[in-house]
Amino acid sequence: MLIRNVRPWGAPAVDIVIADGTISEISAHDAMVPLADGDVDGRGRLLLPSFSDVHVHLDSTRIGL
Image (cartoon, rainbow, N blue to C red; front, top):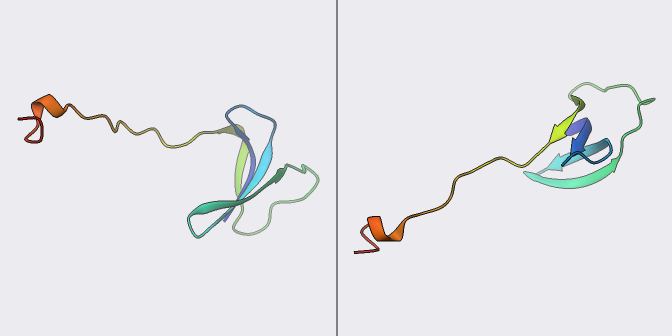
């Protein structure tokens, strides 16, 4: 999968290749190269990791008893 024209954490625009669920390549975005079939156009928007709330309260679980 190729995600084109995104700004990771607000940095300059890049193109990102994702293979087997991981980022395999990051290159500077070239606006002169047309979109190919299957490319995702990020339209210059921010690229951020997913936000997850992974904290735990051990004092209020069975482990904390």
